[in-house]
Length: 455
Image 1: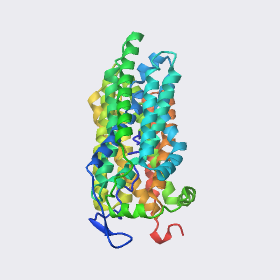
Image 2: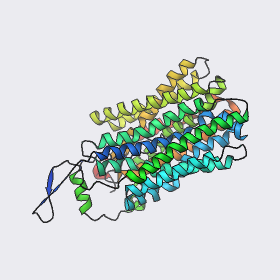
Image 3: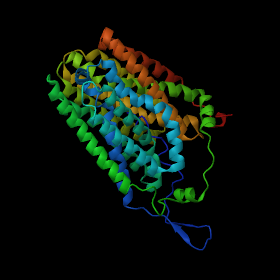
Image 4: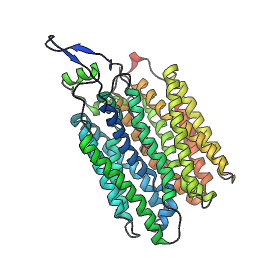
């Protein structure tokens, strides 16, 4: 996903200071030279990755954005449909560490094959679930998609460093992440169009099956392409760093020891909690968006999807602007705190304007909310790197993402229950309270001097 993850899962070490482009370097024998080379095929690799990331991210929100329609078809309550989104969050927590280990040990191709195979299997399971008594089957298909997501989210930075030159790594990472974000955007936009809210159950089953068949067809084509096209690495490395990486035996790295050191880093742990609060709120808003819009604007399922699309697009712009600003100013804490505060303000404005009966106002406030909440994601990762040096960025980003998934589940369940009993305003104020707490916690983060870290 992501979601949102997601950006919610891009490791912040996309650009390494050691990835120095070169034309040749001395080899071990000093008689020849080992050249570096950039293959045109690298663009095929990253666009192929982007494609299956898009296909998977689309499925994260395809149930939630037409929550009321799936409730009617499967004759289940809203909480059951909410789990179709939350399963992506829940699956990530236990599986991220073994999948990260597998990526380090076995490489890109195996991870890509497993990701696309599991994703493809999940889509065909959903095709077989279009009967009113087969909700458990469609949940099984969604679980397969959520498991595939774990294999996808750790790949962008590794793919970029293995295939791309030092000046292209950031671009390659961006393309990889863009596919995920575009998938979420399409997941908001397309399901309300393909599956209209009709009363006849047979017609509804037909529309749902069309959506599932399209998704399965895309997933199958992408899986076949990965089998025949996706390569582990180029024959000649793209950078000096990759030449050195291939010739140097990998060092033993203890994830557990690194995690224990990070858990003793108080500023980082404050960031972990505050990051989880912010991103968890974003997941809850995304998952429950259809319910909130339909309560105040009945029959506006398509516009609910468009509002979700607005949130994602505004968030992509926010992430880009915040990332550029941070690169230029290096004001990690100040920028992170300012964007966090604006996320809180945006949530307050959204809460107080949702029921004004002006749909265009909801578009504006949702866009502002997406701009700041998603813009916070790269800031959180970069701030984490600043707080945890010299620990590996993969470990710190994994802890941030686990926090986001945990709070995402808690907030989605909590806000959903509050909406059921007290309405959308109370549910949104519930999130505002935690965003305020997160803002205060971010303000309390005091980066220690480098010589004080891990002393």
